[in-house]
Image 1: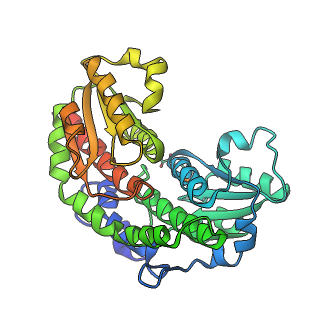
Image 2 (image 1 turned 30 degrees about the vertical axis):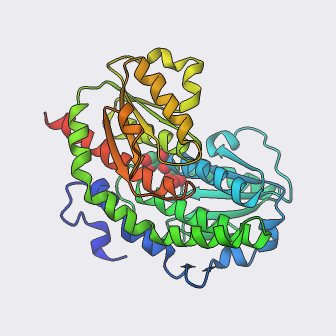
Length: 358
Ligand code: F6R
């Protein structure tokens, strides 16, 4: 480990440093694995066990907290690309109930530290029942890495900040590569789409860099809402887990109430909470759900909620329904969560600083 990796390097907080490190940590995760020109992904842990993975009856993803959110994104991606049923479990639930685990099941364990007790015990139990364990872990040589039959490290470097940021985008990078590799081997993805997604993954570090360059815009937006007591984060599809992640980060960093929700579920009750004092953060990037999420924005506006939206460059509709917007570069909907989470991480930290210093 290099000394610089565990120092703040001029940043006020480790979390801020780690958010800004993401172009290089994602690049490190992809380096030596992904080659968009030749159309190859090299991951020994996947290659050596490809039969086990493509023939899995189902995949169970076991994790906690932010890592669980990465698992939720992966559920959508793996089901879409690989056509394998996926279940995502909180390790703390899985370990105490009596889950049905069969021999053909694959468990993907996601953990930054590789030491989370609930995840570790859940895996031990699943391993005893004959499951194949694939670890997506950051900490090299950690207990979860050692317990796994195979795996892929995220190579995000030491994460010192309590709130997980760069480990999350590293997890998404590994899980996306894994899904693409399985889909290619299984023949459930067209070559054209496979090559497009490879290129888009390769472009992520540069796009994250572009988002970070506009950090000041998020500071300005955060200042406007510094007196809020609650926040609501809404998303659909691939961005639904990002809404959950936004709410978790805000609670963890700022000690105020926040809730993440699937945007379409609001009408089934929680919309009653919306009034002019509630900032509602929409993760509304251009994807196959966009028209639907725009209609959810209209529902919030009709209740006088304050809409802050994370949108794709060039979106002309969402700003007409939003009090504030932040634009991110265009990306395929499978890749978009790796980008849309970054402004949320920054917004939350900026909001915390504004609140504490005013
Ligand atoms: C949130 C956060 C936690 C962790 C969770 C799992 O910012 O850091 O929710 O994600 O405790 O930890 P790992 O990934 O180390 O198993």
